[in-house]
Length: 474
Ligand code: CAP
Ligand code: MG
Image (cartoon, rainbow, N blue to C red; front, side, top):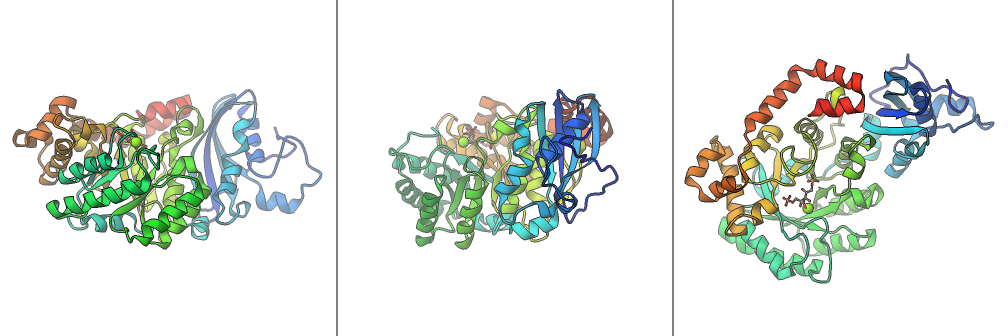
């Protein structure tokens, strides 16, 4: 069975929580699944397609990957559990880790499907390589002033995504703040285009924050998108620091498209100046969807470890893919110190080192005030709900749209269902009339079903493979 002359199977091996990377793969291909498992372990660790005259016992003992479990689904497919020793990985070099575990294996021609469901990062790797968020969930709450109330944060993305001038953009932001939103953000594809230069937009928006803050009496935040080549991002962080904007500006980063090494370095800069960061994940879905790719669970863990303070994780009730069950898991990754194994979601057990603070999760993408109750049922209170079109698309414009969202939050805090609260709040009523009401009972039922049927869902995943895992999530 050995691939390239060596066998990587070690069914007696018990991975160490302190020292081993555990990776759960789904794979299917033209070889028997045992060979596929060997090929993955070889190509992602010390081996290749044939025996090597240069291999020695020390390399084999210290650096090879071990297939310690195989859940066979058919002759050619199954879930493969592999452990990698800590020594295999370089220090503070996340691309080296990606090139190993998330690298060449995707090109092996015998593989028709390959999906990295999850990775459990051992604590010693966490301590050696990461410091986590500087502010995190508690720090962001402090900036907005919600440490006591613990209410969800609420924000908007200025729309159209691109095209408004800096003054027009900042005026929309002003209306959003006046309507009661905590945060206004750039869209992922707006940075420094000629029609809306980054510095112009920044200064105009700071004026909007000051003006609106005078009316609302609260601190508002602007997530400013600095994503660019590395040197330009550094210039922007320095510029923000020179203007002392730590209280008003959250540094927004298109984390996935810029890659982990740029992200790692720019986070050193934002941390140096004590800025909060906002992680937008545009592009991640190219790998996350289907049966060939990498689950966002993996990247989200890296973003928390690297130190993003608030992070997009999807909604479960909006325009983007992602079932409520998996979005709940992504929320847990942002917030919890310890994650339990949920095989049917492709989720492994993992514990964050105690030095790693929680992130504030961001629910964004196709939401509006009528979905707030459902969002709270799924994400709880520690979340930032952002509506773009769900604010600027309401009749009467941004101010009314913002009011509808804030009323949705106020209703939650008073324990009143949104349709009831809408009877005395016309903006919320208009939002519900226009886009409907997502009943939170649907979410609550779904979560209860998942809890009660974990065994059944696991059996489905083991019977049908990755497809069954996706079905179990729905
Ligand atoms: C939302 C959004 C965000 C998505 C990204 C958009 O706008 O600005 O980029 O939320 O998805 O452009 O789609 P709308 P995710 O409120 O108008 O939908 O958060 O899942 O990464
Ligand atoms: Mg967007």
